Length: 472
Image (cartoon, rainbow, N blue to C red; front, side):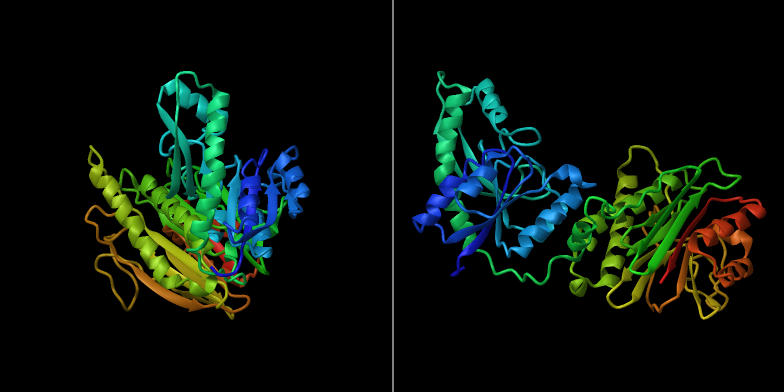
């Protein structure tokens, strides 16, 4: 990079590496300027240091946020607004989460006071590292500059420096030796890495980071998708004049709930998985599917820039990967594992008002538009009749031991006041005609969902019932 890079600093304590970085800038060894410093502790002397050197600085306390993800989204936004190119950790002791990592991928550097991968990991910082080094009796130690990724002290190593240790060294003397190495190594590696970076487009902060940062200390902590409950669990979210409601109920005849629902609070991922009752691990299969999709959404989908995410391709890929993951788990089990689950899952492309829907098995999606109910999905069953949409016993299913399953994927254009119902087949004992009547009553979503469940109970609720409703 020909122009000066803009450096942001995160610090918890003394910020002991800051003077050496400033000296490298002054001596033209590092073509940069420090534009902003954030500390997470009120008593951090790094704040005093920033004031001394005229660096813009701010205390942002983590305890004022609902989650580490909200907090790190706030940090990402603050650095982004300052058009920061590179983030440098100077004695920062918090574990960094995905919002900041995704926003500044390969642009967060840390220096660790040991020769990684030795003496790294959770709880290994400061004097604890030097104490462990002396106790282990190693003859050399040093420092490591590395990139930050999702794993603690496991990001790619960019540089290391080494010093000898004698039998007379103490924690204090080792700390002094290592700090002298850090003062030379850190500015040098920062300069090297900065030269590899392309300019950032500061108009394109990842969508989910902005969403989290905007929620603040009193907002929702990102996405959630809780579903482990053997009786009834319900969820309701609203966003941008849209609302959604979900419930998952065991019914009257089953001992446990093998259904699983997912509804993310950003209203972008929703659906139902119905663990097959005849499979011993049907419940486990449906849980694993949704857990897999939730993690993939948190780690990939929700941080993608909306314009660059191919929603349909992403959804199809994730469903197939979920099936393979569960199938491999079953095959590697020492005992024969009987698994199976349906899946109907929707991914909302909010920017284009489109819903991508994938289904396998006999869980369904219905659309209510202009006082007409449409069934959007077909059942995947043996003896399937494409004209009537009906068939016999379920044949293809997620996590099937044969590894094969039916999979449909389609795109639906959404319009204001459209309503979608995702449901397991437990609701269908109440008949489609009754579902259409409930749609026509135009009730609030929670009341609508509860009435649908009541209808299932009125006919004996012989199966688990799961419902996800969206009003667009």
